Image (cartoon, rainbow, N blue to C red; front, side, top):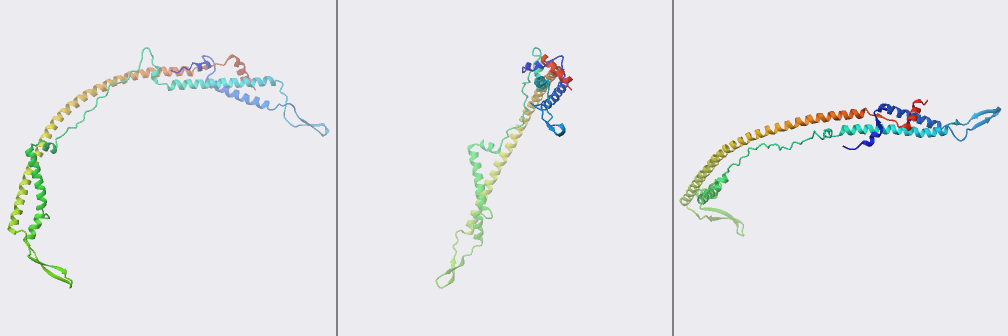
Amino acid sequence: MENLNHLMVFFAKNGLTSSEANHQANMTKEVCEKIARDLESTSSAKEILIYDNNVDIDLDSNHRIDNLEDICKKEGELYAISAWLREAIKAKEILLKYFNDLHWSLFLDSETESVSYFTVEQPIEPNYDPIFVTEQDIIGEMSIADRAEYLRCESIAAHLGKKLHSRGLITIIRKQIQKFIPTRFHSLNNGNGVKDFPVLRKKLYEIDEFEKIFFSLQEEHRSAEQKLNWFKANIKNEVTLRNAAITAKEKEKYQDEIDQYNIAIRNWNDEKSKHDQKITILKSSAEERRLRKIKEISELKIIIPEKLQTVLEFVKNYK
């Protein structure tokens, strides 16, 4: 705690309460103001106008103060008692605020009481986050032969599929052969104007020949696609089986972790509850000491130094 003993110079068991001191400080201020007004009414001379018929007219309100020296000294003493009272009131306010703002732990008995901080780490709740197998994982486990066959079927199915599509190269050529026209006309400017010239169209593929190509490619595509689907089905089934096994295993593991966590968190909560109860008891005891200290300070009386006693009596009796 901060050493505030220098503020205790204003206090004792007997003296003025804060409200009494404040009242006397206000009274002292009023007396000082009245004395100041009286001092303003004196000067080095008083001027009187001699008017006709020997009529005297005062030109000012100046008058002699017989105890001028004593009044000037008393004014300084009055400001001294006022300063003492104000400083004492302020000192009590500082003391009250200081002890009211202190952390409660500073009011513990240092020999028998101490604050222990709860340092037990809170258990962390486990997460259910299993790592599942993907189709790429299964593909990555294939043998060299199976992996090559899988890629071959995938490539053939994709590329032949494009060519055999309704807008694919092979299908378009097949339709053209089926509707083959041996001749056609082509417009051309021969220098004497535009004229239609016959165009002889030479067939590159015979219909029977191309039909064999078409159906052969179609069969190749169907075979590749069928085998590719077989691969994909097996891969998907393997993923499903493995992930089902992973799920079962991870759920069992997770449940064990949750059971352990629930036990750990209950123990942690019990320990923390015991600690919090202890702190509550300590805090209650400390707050009682704080209240007693504040009450003690509140009941302190403001003493009046011996040299200022006569000044305070002067204020009380001043009219």
